[in-house]
Length: 178
Image 1: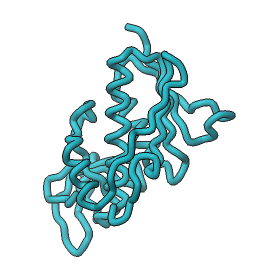
Image 2 (image 1 turned 135 degrees about the horizontal axis):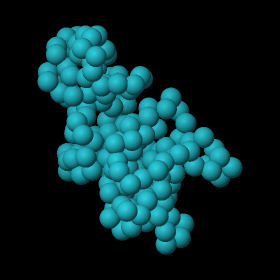
Image 3 (image 1 turned 120 degrees about the vertical axis):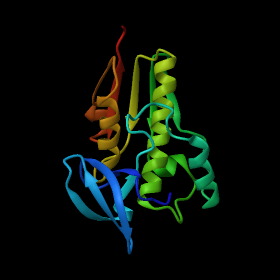
Image 4 (image 1 turned 60 degrees about the horizontal axis):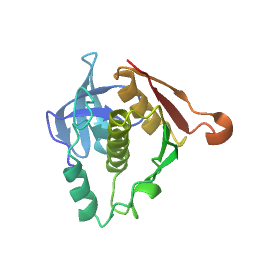
C-alpha cells in the first residue's frame, strides 16, 4: 500500500499511532497522539484502515488484489478447530501465503491482521468459546497490534496461551457470555 498525506498509521517498532503530514525521500512526517511531529521511514509504518479497529473495516478485496499483484497467492487459511468450542489460527505469514517476495513488512503485517480480524469476527459470530491466535514471538509487532485490537473489544478476556503448548508466541481469547 502506498502511504499518503492524511493517512492514519501505526508504528511497526514502537507503540502508538499518528497521521502523516508530509512525505519526502522515503520518510514521513507523522504527528502522534500527543501532538509531537517526528520523521519515520515509510517502511516502518503500517496504514490503519479503521481508527476504531472495527471488525470488517479492512477491505479484504484490496488486500487480496495487492497480494495477487505481487504474485503471492493466498493459501487456504490455516484455521483448525481443536474441538467444537475452540478455534486455533496460525498467523505466521508462510501459513497464509505462498511467497512474500516483493512485499514490505507493512504489507505482511496488514495481511496477518486482516486474517486475524476475519477469523475473530467469525469466531464471535459462531459463539466459539475460545480462539487461540499463534502470532509468533519476533519483535512483538503483530502481537502488539492484536492486543491493541482486543483491548477495544467487549465481552472478551485475552491472555498468553499455554506456554507448554505454544511457547511465548500465542494469545488465547475467551469469549464471555453476556
